[in-house]
Length: 295
Ligand code: AMP
Ligand code: FE
Ligand code: FE
Ligand code: ZN
Image 1 (cartoon, rainbow, N blue to C red):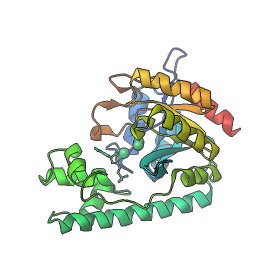
Image 2 (cartoon, rainbow, N blue to C red; image 1 turned 30 degrees about the vertical axis):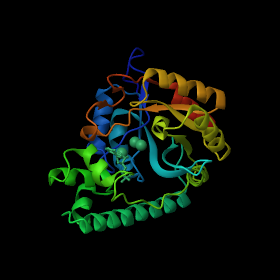
Image 3 (cartoon, rainbow, N blue to C red; image 1 turned 180 degrees about the vertical axis):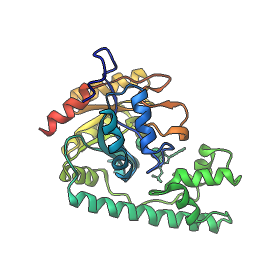
């Protein structure tokens, strides 16, 4: 595989990306073309709650001999010792096997839960006199509609100035019309990924907004629940945070992973493989270690 790459070519990878199957703006095939142009050695597609983009990308990846990894990003609820909550994004990876049927069944339930949240959210917005329907949102989201698709419509119709504004006013956690999903706890999701044969990783830990002490306690607790890795490199992690998370992963015995969290035009400043202003270089060894752990 990848025999057409010279030894000097990048041995770099990207373990976090989205396609049009969730809230990315590139089709799976176009994302694979971009991975090839970006000289990536391996790519994981980690759409929210669906494997549809990964599955559609498999034949394209074969064409180039690109090492394509099946991944997913799950919304979970982290309950802190003091009762506070955080929405933790958990990445699941299957770098050398298929997810179990029970995992796929559970994923189907997650998709239904998302759909019911979307329906409630559309109702709540309509109740505020906003002209938006579930059908419109689903037409944008194709296989999997989410809040970013609501945001695009709210912007187009002039209810918000841009996506960030749409989240501040209507969609985000602190907005009056915020509509919650019945997310499972982080521990439950970790257990499901593990039972399904996958590797679970905490995505972009910076977004948890935890003190160093709480962050450490949380990771120890999650490791006891079966967590295997921590996303060290991410477009939102400046170099000093990358160093911090690397040290933490080493200390706690967690696998190190990294990815750009590429969403295409939805997040224009973020490039596949290299992140924001080139702040990423994710070594191939991270993926090799994941495969070793699975044995
Ligand atoms: P959902 O999974 O449908 O609840 O939507 C969550 C997605 O919305 C995240 O993965 C982000 O891509 C996006 N998102 C969340 N908060 C914001 C924000 N404040 N501004 C822009 N996009 C956001
Ligand atoms: Fe997203
Ligand atoms: Fe995320
Ligand atoms: Zn993501």
